[in-house]
Amino acid sequence: MSTYRNSDAERLYLKGLEAFREARWDDAVAAFTELQGLDASYPEAGKLLAEAQLKLDLSRSLMPDGTPPPRQRTVPVRLIAAVVALLLVGGGAGAFLLWPRPEPVAVAPTPVPPTATPVPPTATPVPPTAEPTAEPTPDPQPGTLLVRMAEGQTLTRAVKNIEIILDASGSMLAPLGDRQKIDIAHESLGALVQRLPDGTNVALRTYGHRRARDCSDMELVAPLAPLNREALTQQINAIRPVEFGRTPMAASIQTIAETLPGVEGDTLVVLVSDGDETCEGDPAAAATQLREQFPNVRVSVIGFNIEQQDWRARLQAIAEGGAGGYFDAADAAQLEAALQKAVALNYRVLDTNGQELFSGPIDSAAELPAGSYSVEISDETPLQVAGIEVPPGGQAVVELSVQGGAMTAALLP
Image 1 (cartoon, one colour):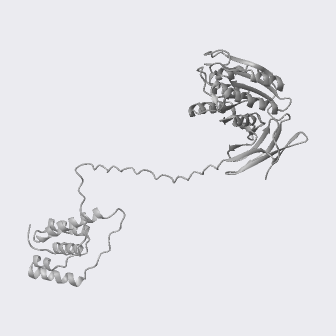
Image 2 (cartoon, helix red, strand yellow):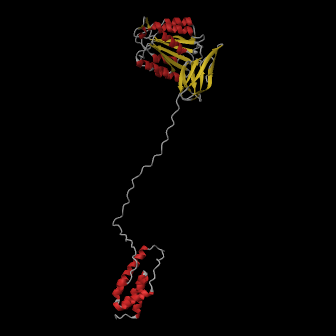
Image 3 (cartoon, one colour):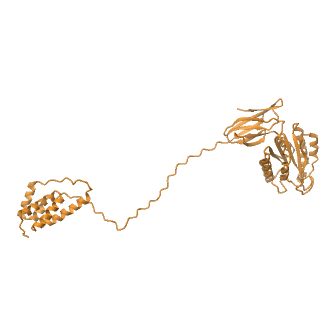
């Protein structure tokens, strides 16, 4: 092919230079490609074509789809004419060096595909933040309910039915001061009989007074019947222990259940003992069972001259199982007072559903959750006081009075 630069080749060269300068890479590539097919006297056209092709490829790879091409700057015609003259006079290579270069275009590095599939980092599970725990609302403090006799009033009433169990085992022969314990018990029970109201029904039981080492030695001395003070006092004084007589407390409590059917009103069992069960029975369980079988029955216990703490604890358990009271008596005076307290009228505390929560003697206090309660007193004519509010940490008081033979109750403010 001739190296003579004809007019067509010159036109294509200038067209390519103009497009190259204005960064119109499509036009530059087209012009230089066509020029190379016509004339080989433009060796720099190959370099320009390669650079234009590279710029075109880069611009296409970096430009998002739908993005219009950037606005190009126009090169003055006079500048182009000057460049052409230089090319004609001094050769194309020198003119190419003098040709003003387009402003550099920042090229983003071509991303290199990773050689292995990256494994996403395992996220360390973050435990959920615990919800703030609300401070628990403290339960209100319990209060007390006291049922007592009014000032100047003396309680002369007793439970309608009383079952006395007197311990006559061998230990009751032991001396207490200058007398035997059994003699002190005779005296204290005799004093109680004299104070009991007329019409009280009384039964008397004992054990260990006839045969030594015999757990079946139990006797119903006086069946439940209206009080006969003289006869009952004689029966009490006739009870004499034998040496090595046993203490079958559990069996004695169980035999009471045989005589209770048909008995009307509340019944109080009073056990007077100076020692522990010696016949392998469980008197606390017997008292609990009796109470469950006859809800109107309570079992109270008087511990007479008890020095062993474990014996006292087991006697207290009998009273707890029988929903009664426990009274300690160290000597004659205390035994008489304990007997009087044990047989005094009792009161029951009921909740709003009618469930019994407490049962105890007059002049005793019940600890209860704050709330509304009613009280029933087991007199000849049962007395009920309703709407008693026990304040948290405080005390509600019910006072009893006897006027004209009738008992009344007042709720103190």
